[in-house]
Length: 500
Image 1 (cartoon, rainbow, N blue to C red):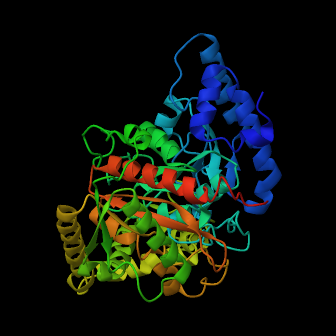
Image 2: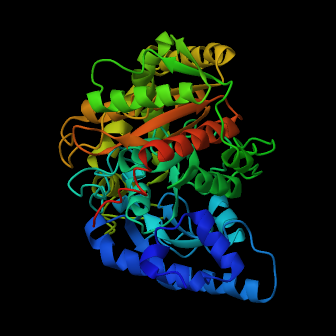
């Protein structure tokens, strides 16, 4: 028997193997993680809703399936924390907002269905910035999440609940969404692995929309292989999503099992360093580049001038799409309704509901987006931002003619204290400086741990970027770097687990 305290520190691949061999049952694994959530989540606040009964029922179904001699999938019985942006039938989906408080969706998102079909055990829904708008999970209507490395610091955003659940051993797997870096940035600051698949690689059906041309769901884990196993489960074409790619899923698991950078050309973009970057972050990044060179990679310097405009373009495109998407929250069909006393018009009820239901950051972005789309300003702002988006895509295309992958720091700094940037939106937006260009171009990217910053002992992330539909390159390079890094310095999370 595996000790319960050790069980929660196993990788997803190890848990699945032990369930398949009969060394552990899915119920034992689920109970251990539910006990961990009960013990530490009051301090961490990774979860908004824990589905104890549902998780145990799913686990029992896995054990019964095994008892019947049926073949189990590669992640059968492994617990998972699901970002509260995907619909789950009969389980609250709030998107971190008061406007959907207590809403029980009548259907499952395609991603949720795929997880259930693969016999993954969904523990519950994780905290997030409201409607995925933020870089710190401080914009949640239900309070902030703490970083398990230091509970006074942010766990990243918008998917801070998912990354914190991993780093605090409340779940071995998690799902996030990435609009401008909301999978990779939380992974970076919590010492975990997060992947933004190629846009359209994972279905968005049933995922509450923030910015439809940028949003992408993806896997979060503590190791590269675990992320690949989860990626394979959730990816694939979905006829219910018009932006879904009708093509085979790249061989991500095979790539993760055969990591190598030998003979690969690795690009380093000069725009991804300089003023505003923490010294310890640059130090760990340079060490990672040197490590890849030791492993046989050729390092190529790249100049992508349009990347300097990415932040400005993103903060016109994303709010514009958000102002359109969030118009559906009108108090007429579902969610919160305020002021409906029979004396007010439908317009008044809608206005009162939005005032009460949306938080400050959501209101800020709706107003910014509505202004950018308004008559007389559309071409000057939104139209210009889309032109910059094209230039960024072209810069990536030129870069990938010279290199196989691009690497950079994932975030300019390590996790900052909760509240430090709450009153400075621009400082908050700069947290996504390195991640945003990939969303604008639609290609694939990963963040994985590359050590701790010497100044504060907090995790630093290495970002790997690959061309669209070349997601397997992320895992090939990521697995090689992870193995070499662990052999040389130890895995930052598995070796120096934060104390809770």
